[in-house]
Length: 108
Image 1 (cartoon, rainbow, N blue to C red):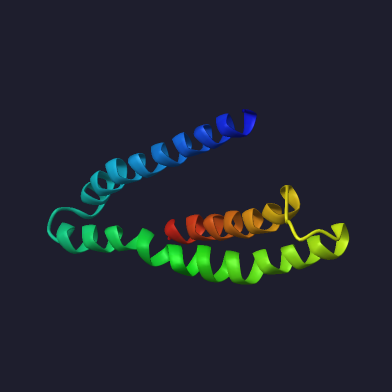
Image 2: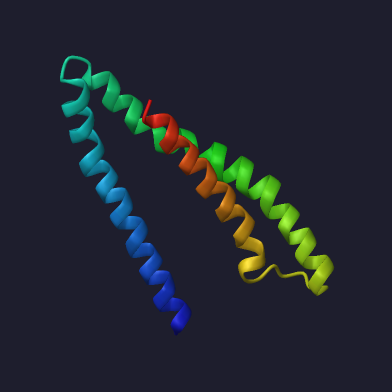
């Protein structure tokens, strides 16, 4: 029952994040860059999530990092299941680092 509550809380946070993204980012973009090229900028913003998901989540996280962590987990625990923070920690660190780098580049 605890896992169900954690999943519901995580889903709520993800939903709030995406809702805030689609409410705040277009308004901020129009304020920062004006309405002259807002249509092109809005389309570029709309393509950011669908274009970034296959690159970061599928290619980097699942094929490279996840498979490597699962192999290590299988060797150490002699189990076919990859469970716990051992499997998710390295992926979350890489994704957090990439987000921090993007935040630094966005300031320039």
